[in-house]
Length: 552
Image (cartoon, rainbow, N blue to C red; front, side, top):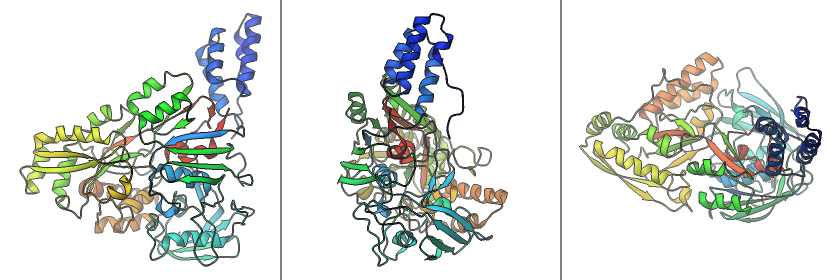
């Protein structure tokens, strides 16, 4: 949406004619991209312009018409040497940004404002019971190898996750599909086992990228070919990827850079040093304890967005002693969440309540519906005794890849747990290979989840008994029945009741301790421009930094 407000004239409020002319000149240079933010702010303030007025011009300029060109270098986290280009096996931010943000598109997309918008599915229609969906596939779209997009590509891309031998993390998301078939070259019909009013939202999941069909029911995921804004030129898993702009990209006003270099930098200090030195143009995951220092650097812009990003401590409920709910409850009570909020994320977020439904969700339980769990040594002792222990020693496995500061958080938890008779040994694990060798392997680990815009999505992907990413290995009969009911319930009041009850079950009986929801803090050079609204569903503008940002 274009800005309809009247253009700000900074020279209008100055009485000195020479100063007014100079202000007008530097304002024009800045808005045309010929002057940096720092130079403009310094010049405007020295000529008598107020900080507020100058900042308004800067903010409006960031929402100005994007310009094409330049090589964009971004430092992100979550890459591993074991990464592959199979969209079903995407694990973390590096491959999300590369595949879903640069190389490929989905059928639907979550806009920066949180709304669901069409992507490769131009439109859709649904039966009254929300069981049968008719998707109209966009015409005139080409893959980066010149192949035209058809319904065959869509059907085979979705079936890639549904095949019997599939190891895709999206298998549970699409598990409600009973029948999937092409309806001509540019339409797909989907019949669900049961109604699901949120089905189009699920199609925006970052695993469900559309790849070209091989013509035999399989897809070509190995090449990295997609319909996205960029073409893969070089890929060193877990290290560096280079993409160049797709000249035939079908989206107007997107993918502005000539090339995007995505670099895995696990260490926050190294990412910050790279940004300050100019080695990279943007970084994911600013170290929260140094945000105030980075904000003082005039050439750097720090942005913070709040969504459903969460730090979790999953316990494997199929493994002793975590198969005992009283033991798990005792652990949840020895976490001093207020302390974590202050010392681990420095106030950039809010308390978690062992419930994955966050502040950006519609049906989140209120404090009245689900009171906040607090640090309570007496309650921890009570539940530990009920579990059959007077004292116990536990191992907590952590790495910054799990979540930034998780080792320090583990040490805080060790201190706060000791009075309850729980001795926590914090095991520092290597960042590389953490998701393949530690997460879902060790009994108790550090983890983080990116935002999911709807309750059904989060519950289906992580907490359902058959979910591919059920990292607590938790199976709860009533919860799974309610999950099916929630999908098919179209009355919003009744639907809320279902989802609040599910949150209570996870809080009281689940295998996850969820201490914090954390803001996503990123930073970039003042030469980088971004839309006025930054997506909060995933880091780096919903993982669309390559598609949505541009150079001044």
